[in-house]
Structures are given as C-alpha cells and as structure tokens.
Length: 441
Ligand SMILES: Cc1cc2nc3c(=O)[nH]c(=O)nc-3n(C[C@H](O)[C@H](O)[C@H](O)COP(=O)(O)OP(=O)(O)OC[C@H]3O[C@@H](n4cnc5c(N)ncnc54)[C@H](O)[C@@H]3O)c2cc1C
Image 1 (cartoon, rainbow, N blue to C red):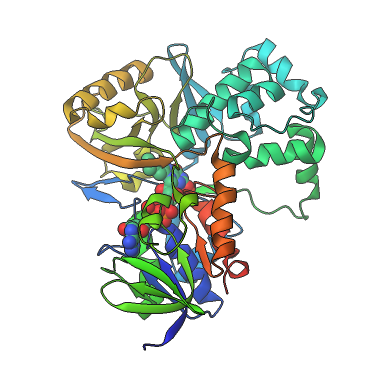
Image 2: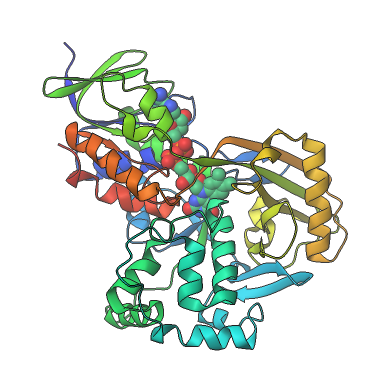
C-alpha cells in the first residue's frame, strides 16, 4: 500500500489552489490534483492579438485578510489598477449614471431625492418580526432601504455578482453582511457605523482593485509552481472511497489521504463519490453565462474612464454588465487599443447560451452603443460560453448547505469547498481556505 498523505485537495481552480497553498503554508502534508493540464479552472485567461480577456474573475480587492497572505505566500505578482476602477456606472434613464465606489455613492443621481429620503430613515425601520422564512434579496433591500433603492440595488447586486434573479436569491446567502448588520444592530447603517468604529486605529488601508500581472492564469500557474511536487496536473479523479481511517482516491494512480478537500462543483463532486450518500449534492442550481470580449482601437471601441456598468432594472437589454477592462488595467489591451468584457445570460436569460455567436455579438454591440451613446465597431471579438454557469444562491441554498454539512459530518475528513457553496468570489474562497484546518482531520 502506498503511503497516506495528510490532505489531498481535488480541483486546481482558485479554490483548490488557495486551500493547497494555505495548507502548505501551515506545514501540512498536502497534495493538489487537477484534471486538466493547466491550473485555474474557469478563470483561464485568454491572450490573443494583444487583448487579455478574463472569462471568470479578473480582479482582486486588496489588501484582504485572507487573500493577501495566500497570494504573498505563493509569490503571485499583482499590480494596482488605475483610479478609474473607483468609478462604476449603472445603465439607466438612457445612459450611464455614475455610482462612485465610496460613501459618496449615497449622493448618486441614480436614486431620486424621495428615494434617498427613504434610505435615510433605514435605521428607524424595524427588523422583521419572528418570521424566519428565507427572505429574497429584493425583499430584504426594499424592506430596509425603500422600494426604489431596494429594487435598484438588489437588481444590480444580483446580476453583477451572480447573474441572478433578485426575487429568487436569498439575502442571507448572497450578501450575508447585510443580514448580519441587521441582526447585530437592527439596521444596516447602524451596524455598518458600529463596525467602522470598532476597527483598530490606525484604520487598515482601504482595499483597492488589483490585477494579477499576466492575468489570472499566470497567478494560477505561479501558485501551482510554488507547490512544486505537491501539485499534480492531468490527474482526473474518478472515485473517492472511504477505507477505514482514510480515503482511497482513484485517478491515473491510487492515492490515500486522511482528509480530502473536494474543490469541485456539487454535481461534479457527487459523480466521484460512489460509496457516499450524496443526496445533499444534488439539485444545486446554476445559470449559464456568456462572456464576450469586445476589442479594437480606442476609436473603434471608445470606452469611458471607469470600471464598467451594470444594467439597471428598467432597461430592456441582453447585457448584464460591461467592464471597461483597458480603462482600469491598461495591460489588458495593446497601446492605442481598448477592451470591454461583457456578460450576458444568467438566471433571467439562460437560453442565450444556445444562440449563434454573431447574433449575441450584434445584440451586445448595439446595446453598448445605446449605453455609451457612441458608435462601437470592434475589430476583435471573442465569445466564451460557460454552460455550467454561475452558482445561484437561491431561497433553498441555506437548506442545501445544511444537508451538505450532514454529508460532511457523516464522513469526517471529507469537505466540500469552492464557489458553489459558501461565497462566490475569490476573496470568499481565500477566506474559506484560511479556516480549512478546523474542518479536516
Ligand atoms: C463571468 C464571471 C465573472 C466573474 N467575476 C468575478 C469577479 O469579478 N470577482 C470574483 O471574485 N469572482 C468572480 N467570478 C467567480 C470566480 O471566477 C470563481 O469564484 C472561481 O474561479 C471559482 O473557482 P473554483 O476553484 O471554486 O472552481 P473552478 O474554477 O470550477 O475549479 C474547479 C477545478 O476542478 C477541476 N476538476 C473538475 N473535475 C475534476 C476531477 N474529477 N479531478 C480533478 N480535478 C477536477 C477543474 O478542471 C477545475 O480546474 C466570476 C465568474 C464568472 C463566470
């Protein structure tokens, strides 16, 4: 029998990479295995004709309590984006309305004076009575901030982060901070102020948008390389079986481990666990998205300064969001060129995944022209379909998570991590990685 590794991490996307890097950092005997030749999972950078398109995550907000030490430990090179990243827009009322990424956001023209007046009385709004049913994101934000601001914020937050439907997403699962602040202080604003006051002095630096030098794939390769022999590519795991005090992991060869961290989507995880009751891993919804790179010279694709825009609730459009990649990160296009990253599809338009490329591109370009108020004539276009899609933390998400925790409790040493479960962004994945030693043998 070959030797027993302390922890095997399955899946070399950013979740698996963060977990393995952290475990390595705390001197655990860890091995990360990835099915494909390259690490990084869905966040695999496309570099073509001078354009750098990120089909998944593309930026990090740093410094971050969990992300910063992990990236530093692996030696990932990062650089700050330009100031433009502070400026974000909503497409509404026939054009782009600025929502600064700061407390000044409260002054935005996106919300009427009446709407702002209602927002201002948020601290006086009582909590929900003892109704413990799951509340939608739209329901929660409208109850706290009023109908106008609640509808706008729920819509852009749901589509900007989850490509989701705010009426069907759980407030507590998608943006737990808001629910926690209400639970702590009876109000989002009061809770936010209390937390700010409790911060140590001097205050930690404000997180700013950063990009990995060379793209997310370069960051993934650096993390994999820093693991040395503790990273194995081309290692598709076919089964994981409990055997006495350890797990047997079958792939191109047999591995044994005391703990197994499964950094895979729920359906993919269920498929490799034949001997385990995987009821808790079925029925997790996700919504397909298409990412479109729209590139050209700066006169062909004239992008404003800024991070990008999200489409507001009253605009009939295919585009969920459009990031002005080359405006905030000049390395994403060659000098004199511009690149926009557009996201379409999601919970409210999943069928677009089957539309031909030229139809999707034509719709996107004409909508960009409407939003930006100028002609857009790209000379470089890339369409990337993500059929498995973005996990949807819907009204059943927390119930599903509880039954997944039963699977973990019944199989001590087996844990499930990744963007499908307890947080969708890369910062959540890093936060989860920092807590892994409490969950494994
Ligand atoms: C359009 C889009 C935009 C996004 N924007 C942002 C953003 O701005 N900010 C942000 O923080 N996040 C963003 N995200 C989310 C972010 O990209 C994800 O959180 C992250 O990439 C998910 O990583 P993961 O490791 O959980 O999963 P995955 O990337 O899916 O990794 C799973 C890995 O497991 C491997 N694998 C599968 N089966 C096996 C097997 N049997 N054996 C071994 N290996 C296997 C796969 O090859 C893959 O490498 C975005 C996502 C999308 C789609």
